[in-house]
Length: 485
Image (cartoon, rainbow, N blue to C red; front, side, top):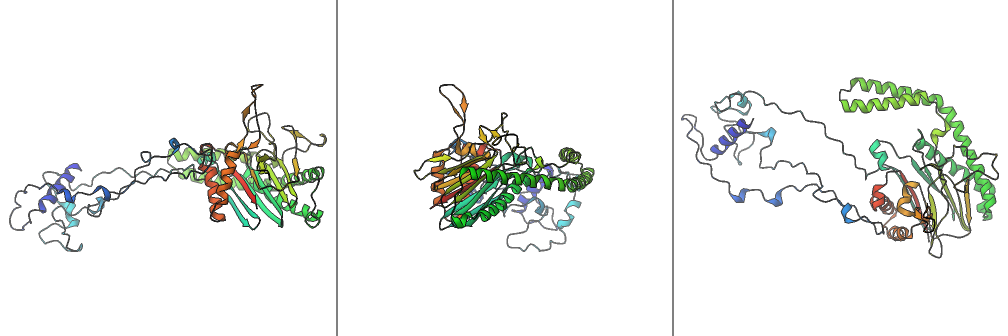
């Protein structure tokens, strides 16, 4: 192939100086003049490499250092297309004739000159194998590039009214992006009446097979049941704020109803779930039989093993395990309740940031409790406790906030003070305080957004890539952030 290329170049350069004649033998090629520097491509004409744009840094104290920013040296080289004046591989002209710039592309060659289609029939002493097609390496499949900074957006919420705004999202974690697992978080927002607003977040358990459905079920059921509760008690009409004991009783009963509904639903779906997995397994086996690539085959076999385990294990309520954090804003203050981990807080009228819940955490790392679990053991009076707080944990605050925030634990390392050392004992503990150094700049960013859509985009950007801790977070993330004027 190298000889062939050299032959083409030699002939093409010769033709530029000497016009071939059909009757006389071709004269010796004239010395090829050096190309003029004016004809050389200028550096300004070279295609620029695709440079990954830098992440927009939010105005927060956790802004990542410049060492974390990508540089042009790290950017992948762009695929450079051949210039218009350079022949492409597939467009190689005939060995004997080079069309002039002022000749149309469809000009027929002379009778005594080989046509382009006949090029491969011409053999020369320099390359006796010219009539043989060169062997090329088969094109490999392009490598799939996974961008861990571009998560799936399961749900985005942005509402702006005269009273203020609510903005939130549920997005996929980096571990789920790399593993091909969808986002298992969810959230909900509903306004019952002027001044009465319900905010809910739910974090699906990573160990549960149907946790994504469980988190959505928690939000949907809670919205429906709280709506019924407010209507039956006529709290809006009476402008009534329940006591903490009343609120605890109502929430304990509401979460127990949710638990029973999920248990019943799981039992009804067990047979259909098994059939669906069997059909999925059959389709996968057919795909495995047609697959020859060893890497793809290995991945498919792992997936097959997981499906076989799902078929052997009946569907249970705990397969829908998910936490729940709930806030009911009223004209007189805030009513909160939760089961599981996560964080919830608010900005008080004096400008301080305060927590509104203590996460339920077990002895083991990442251990917590979920709606389908046996958290409401009737033998415990007045209720089962975890992390020294009741299940459910409720609070009644007779104060209107300036701002509120609810989130899954995937956001807490960015926004919360949750790990500190006691100087006297040397032990580490959870201060459980919103980090004002994060939330004050965030509040300015949210207030300065051009519109509600821009506000949602900016919030996702800040939580996802706006801080060093955010770039290192692998868990799904959900946040609801509200501001009251």
